[in-house]
Structure formats: C-alpha cells, structure tokens
Length: 121
Image (cartoon, rainbow, N blue to C red):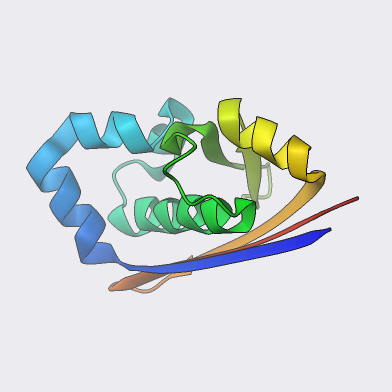
C-alpha cells in the first residue's frame, strides 16, 4: 500500500486564525511540543498545518474524522521533521496498513507546503 498527500497554505491564513482565535485555535490545532518548537514562528506553524492536512488526505478521510492534534510533527536531533500519529489517526493508519511515513515541509514568507508519503503492506 502506498498513500500520498500534499497541501499548500497561505501563511497569512494561519496568522489571521491565530490573531482572531488566539489560544483556542493553537490548542485545537497544535500539540504543546509543536507550539514550543515553533516558538511563535508563523511560517513554521503553517508548515505543520499543511502537513496535518496532507496526512488527512493520505488517510483518505481529510481532517473531519481525525483530530488535528492526533497528527503531530516532531523534530529529531538534526531538526528533521518526523510524523507521530495518535488516537484516531493512528488507528486509521493501522487499518490501512500504513506503517512508515516520510514527510517534507517547506515555506516562504507567504506560503507553506506539506508533503507526505505513507507506505505499508
């Protein structure tokens, strides 16, 4: 099984949501570890937002079925982003036989993109 997902977002969209909804938005979308790592950098938060959308697409459900925080981007010692699934996202991935995930995110000042490849049985 192979699944892919990609998403691109305007950084300003995340910035507006944070300005409008503040902590309510950030706590709904990002884990504490993501929030601390990004340290308020909107472009980095937008990249994680795009990854979460891309994972929803790779799972074939979008994000209506899984919670945003069930999809987490964590960085290793070399700052390489890695995916950690929790809750319903982890359950769906297991049901689909998706056991290995590779992610890539990038951004400019105005746009962020997230790309995921999931592999399995």
